[in-house]
Length: 505
Image (cartoon, rainbow, N blue to C red; front, side):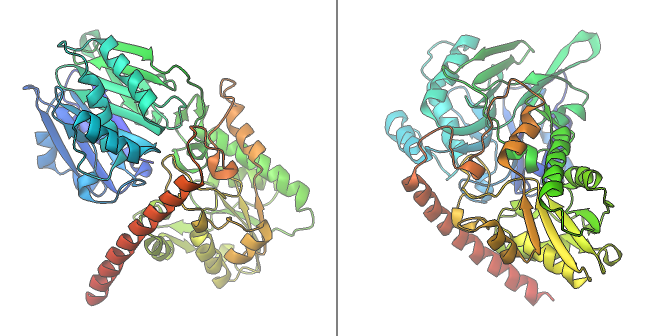
């Protein structure tokens, strides 16, 4: 999924970008990077694999000088986990441009050829973000004047929208100009803008993937960047904005609300927390209606995203709500770990069941979603091992039956536990005595009820409809083959790491 941030300030922005990335860490734990512009108009860059706290040491922060900068946390979906693919990326022509990107392009292969053949530009990694940067740079290079005007930049972004396909929320810096941010014409990936008034009534601006990044730095949320819109903030703090798409519409990603975003964020004018409460309310009503003869003693969430929904389910069912799992907060989210074996091995390290809440009880577990089923199966086995009589499972999201191509790491249908299975077959596969899923219509209503301007959501993982077009069986087959090759490389690396680990025991 990735997280991006950009700040145009009146003083050094390195610490602010660092702090913003720490609260966006849930969006990507694979790598992190920050670029700033110093007072000699030179980029200062630090990026590497790892968590924000590990990538940036004191000596790195001291070198990241300047009042303008962007940052990124990576969650790999296209390309690989190589340190060379950490963002932001940089090109020296024209002017010097650096860019960070959240999302996934769906026509990367065609674009890569276009960049080389037509623009004579070399792309050095497998990352779609580097391709996007070079497309943007090539469009800016068509304007002979210096400096670029706001209209020049917006025209370039208009052309970018017409060339690339997929999901993208981008922040970029153009040397000698300022910060640029833009969002895809469907608004699939989130992006917000805020401001902060400092001494002498000067205004600083910030863009970020989620509003929570603004909150912790005392920036006021102005609004969401609109689908297809571009923001340009000059180095001296002048704000320009323009709609740069001829055909834009709201199709925000539904999975942001189900799983990825922090509950204290506002995305597209919708409280993530409130949407999860509504998910629990609607699912609770469905359980009460369809499971009238099911004996439930206690409702327990699988932490943490499902806690809000589970509390509402317990209220509706009039059953006790308990925290039955103790979470080790020093283990990353298993869903966004890069390999299946790593995900499986981490479940028991991540959660431990509190026996007193399970022993001799019929337990209703609540999860936000069920993707591959690996985590669910491990958790259900754990719960039975501490003495639960019956284990029921409720998912706040519908069955995930289709691959995602817009930046979520589940692009292969055969990896999904719901693929070609009925609900009963899924229950049997993960070891649940009974299983229930949220209805898609109820999930959509849980989100759109807060904002009447959102008429659609990007729901491809549930309904198989890809709003940007161009996604057919041949594309999905090609994607599956690439993922299989990448998986072999990662599995080989994991085996190597496991051997090293075993030798050290």
